[in-house]
Image 1 (spheres, one colour):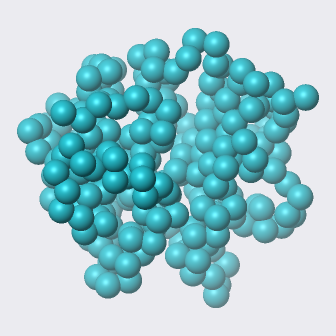
Image 2: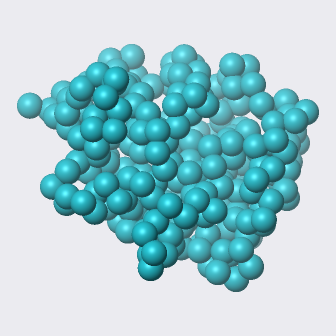
Image 3: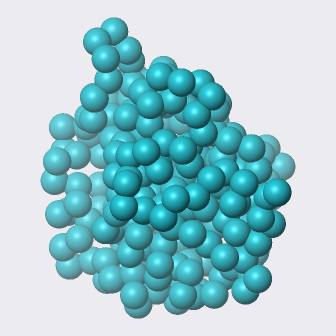
Length: 247
């Protein structure tokens, strides 16, 4: 029997990712009757794909249990919904020879497209630090929306230094609303729209912009010049579960 009051957040890493989501939960933006369990995969999306490839009957909770012997053992029926948060990280090529990371990440989004079934996957471009990659009074990131692949090694440092949004413990609900609004404005640019701020949310929901649709736009950019358009998975997820008003 599926537990209707328990939701799993599967996070790629253990330290920073758990810290981010622990602080988000403290803001009480989720219903009080819902228990959110944070599970750390401790491996990236491409490793998860390889594990699933070994046995198509495995579910993601089983894989987490197998890879993390010290975590409490749970099963799929413990949760009504599962959400996965992983990084794009195109420089991480821990794949067998002959496999293209672009094909793998697309396959993963097609597999994890429903939170009540296999789970729903959200991807941060290029990584979890995209959440804090914002400047005051502008929608631009520290890299002006795009980051070239060759600069990914300095991304964490660049977004952390002298950044007023580096400390998530200081985030408020108003901060989250601002971050969601910035995410929508960036999507407006990614999809080559020229909408007014008050129109973007309606467009986003009407078109049912999905993680797979975002990936397809990201791959167009990457194939063209190895650029990554900076987007965080966290506001993308929150827009679907948390009311936002764009003024």
